[in-house]
Amino acid sequence: MASSSASSDQNPYEYYASFTNGPALQGKFRDIDEETCFYAYNRRLRDAQTQNFVLDFGNDDAWCAMNLSQEDFGLLLRKPILILTTSGRSNIWAPEEQKDVIKEITSYYGVSERLQGMMCTDPVAAPLKGPAQVQSLRASFHRSIDRSHRPRMEDLEEAVSLKNLSDPDDIQKAASFRGLTFAHVTNQIWHFCSVDHGPRYTCVGYNSLYVIPNVGISNGRDLPSGKRLWSWLILCDDGTVISIQENPYARISEPRPESEVKSVLGVVRRNVQMIFSGASKQHSASSESDSLVTIRVRASNDPRSDHVSIHQDDGPGLLFYYIFDDWVTSYALIAKREHKYGVLLDRLREDMLNKPVVDLVNELHWLGRRLAVLRRLYQSYELILTRVLQRQRLLGDEARSRHPRMPPGLIIHRESELSSNCENSVGVRLNSAAVARFERLLDRIKLYCLSEIDACLTEKESLTFLNFNLIALKDSQAVEKLTRITILLAKITILFLPVSLMTAYFSTELSGVKGVYTQTEYWISFAVIMVLSLLVLVLFGYASGTIEGRPIYQSLSRTFISSSKDKLGHQRKHVD
Image (cartoon, rainbow, N blue to C red; front, side, top):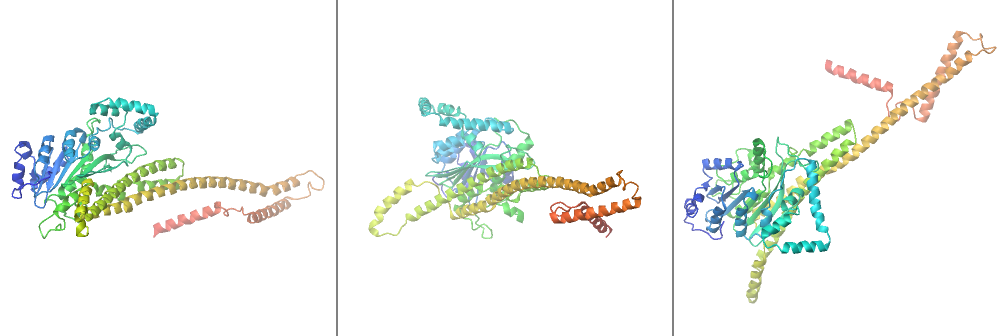
């Protein structure tokens, strides 16, 4: 982690024993290639009391220490680094409790004070419990933004008041009093991201969403469920990779059950454990399923090994890539195992076909809001990858321009220009292996994650229109049934109207009618008029298209016949 190198004759045991100014530091580093140390440290990674660890590895050795203090990091930074282990990683959890450690490390690599302040920001004051608190916090967030649009004179007065404060802590308290900190920004804007470059570092910041199995973590109706955490990832020019992750359970939050804390830490630190295992010789893929999540960042001098293609100089770049690429979390979205948006859409479709109601549109609306947040989150990853790859192309062009083909007379003038350009360039150059993996990750995000989310959003829009169409069809069918009943009653009335007139005629007390017709003649006339009325109604129905079974509905007789056929066929299947 230092700029210079120790003697190549010094082995790792002698190197870590040379920290005479820090006796406690001598006993903290252990060789994780040994089986006992590997499994002991692997268990400690899942412990909530573990706040930081340092992993120093190379081709032949891999050493690790946990829970280092500010003085320990200061000794490591000032000590010449061992030549056998040129790839180092520092991981810090709960940054609000280790501000001195973060400032000690980042100041050494020239990280700006602005970035240091954001890395050391205290978490949100209180945990969110429900939609009501989410709305209240967002209202305060928007009020704090609206204050920035006040008249210019008030802004000038505030600037003068801040200028009169000489102590940086007082300025920070005065600014924080307005209710807006970096923790509020990352908590409210999930797709917020940061890409910064310095002469000795490349820094990215992003939000990650972890879905915890068997633990319901709700963030409100308009946000995806899961644990959101902000992470900083810094690649330094000496091969050191620094990872800082937000504390999932800050001390100011309410106490949580121990089982929940273990489940959350197991998922949140899952990627770190896989990287830690990949840096040790004790871990190997024992099956095809394990090989999918096996991460290799360490070269091997054994010609029989499958990892001879990994060079020692590739370690920092691969480490930087694998920390950013949490493949297991992204795969959960693709497989619909944890983010069950596809399953939820299928259930809503079935509910619509069974009983379309307006309440289903409300569920689709909130589902669309959650998918939109998830899409912006992955778009922030796409933006980070695009900017990192653009910087790598720029650094590659600068490196090629340092050795141009030119006439001998222009060499001196050209070297002076190149030296000034090198001083002004910022960012750390990645090796080709890491660049290729970042390009592949960019394609994977576009092809799998964003396309899957876009497909769900498109299906959500189609289901919204489908629900309204089904409701309209349901209303149309109700009107059709009412019309059918009305037509049936009208036909019955028309059918018996001639018979009623005939009966009234036979019952009159007029001369020449009363006592002239017999009972047989009455029923013959009744039958003839009934048959003629039926024929007239049938002809009228065919002519007007209102006969039963024609337009939309199905006649009662046809319904009875079809249901009888279905029952008979079902009984025959059981008999067979």
